Amino acid sequence: MRELIETLIITLGLYLAARTALQPFTVLGQSMEPTLHNQQYILVEKVSYWLHAPERGDVVVFKFPGNPSEDYIKRIIGVPGDHVVVGNGHVSVNGHQLTESYIADPPDYTDDKTVPPGNLYVLGDNRDNSSDSHAWGLLPRSDVIGRAWVALWPLTDLALLRDPSYPGVR
Image (cartoon, rainbow, N blue to C red):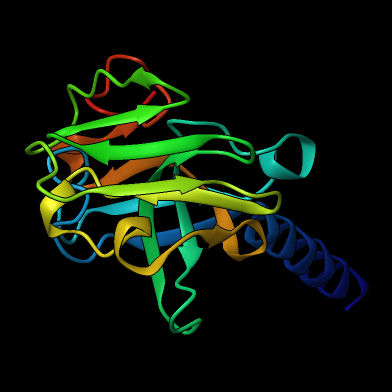
């Protein structure tokens, strides 16, 4: 009986540790096309942002500020202190135009925001078909769940999302 209890405690401990560090996520919609696809299954790692701040280019899952019961996935474009300008089909950060080979199409809207402390500016890779910072404003840093880490399903997309060879994720 003692061995069974010890096994259960160890199993529960490992489960809780894994659940604290990782979370499964299913991409819903086309807002991250062509990088991530509708119904693609990924793992989100939740530990690295305990150690360092989110970075430009990271693809993150977060609680949607307009409805915290919904999780969204987008790319970080601006971090605190950045001045983000969207216009003429381009995105610029602090006066430097981004080279965005990962986007579906250039944005057909304009936006101009400076990112204050505690916030992020996020956009979907499918710029014109994404509910993101250009539509609803800045993302509070506290709403970030974690960073997209591994694409698991379908198996043809199996990859580490931080791998430079994976399209659109740095």
